Image (cartoon, rainbow over all chains, first blue to last red; front, side, top):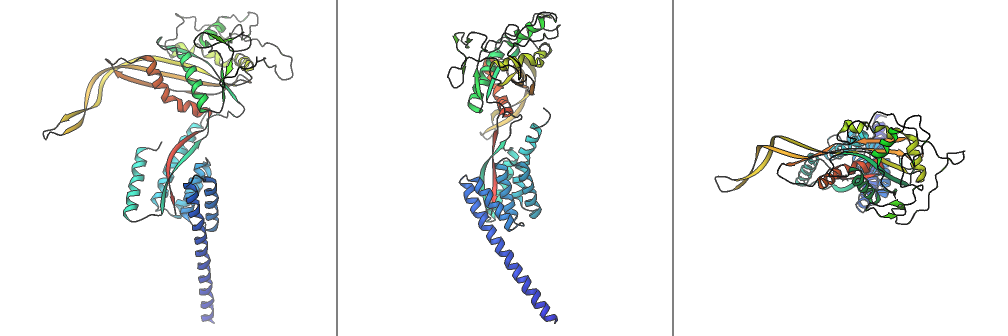
Length: 118
Length: 316
């Protein structure tokens, strides 16, 4: 009985890991394609691809980072901030994400100041 | 637009990653749009009306500022720039103050002398010649009829006289901030600006004050000098030297007025200064442009979306 339960659990875990790996793989394809189109200036398409990537794998920090950059590029500062913060939460030791976030904050803070009292 | 420390940090990260064989990142240039400080969507046209200028007599702050802002707006904003005659705003403010409160109702065209409007037969260009009022596109604008207020017959609105007791004091010249303050009431005269707006089909009106003054200072300044060290190499060394310097200060205040209502939408103050060694002869006009160059991005940022260029790192 116990042996059967262990077998079932391990099969389930194995299949879950397979699904997760498949998701990450599909998400990675979206991220790669997004990078290619962004390099050609097609930021809307890139943003769509990275949105797909984080849907497929919400734990993919790099995809969140790229998505944040796309939001920043299109002036969606609130969305960019959330995406950067998610990326940092998922991968707190990634210096490149932190660097991007610092640069974003520098501009965003300046914008907030400009929108101060009129 | 990236701070040097950030560039250095970014560069060091790239070097580090390259050293450890990390190739899953791509540096990409981005342009972050910065929204304008004020909403200009209700306007398709802009009138840089004129400025109350003061300070040195070497530069006509009113004329030069209007010329410069119009030229910048033509090339860097989506608004059509109205090419009307530059208003002698200080004179208008002075005349308005002179008018006693009990005087008969005066119009902006006689009291305020709005020369770019249709009531003046023709506008005069900067060189003094007479030509029809045109827009920046170059085509001659059709005569503009003053628009009546909603639901009422067309009529000329009286301009209420401004509180007295100001610019008449002294020689009437504007030398400092205190002198300028006496003219500020014109910017609150909504009837005047509304009337001006009606004459130009309700544009966004840009006006304000410009104070361009001489300055001089003396003290120790850190500067670099090149020396030859004992080994015969050229070395740059900082040293402190006492210097007498002179220069200019510019203090503009840009005021944006809704031509439909005459109300102030937004205003921004700036302060910039430049100093040269006392023996250096720099033309005041050249300094004026140098200082205005520093302010222009902020001015344009009030009206139109500006893009800040930077670099980010995409990750795989």
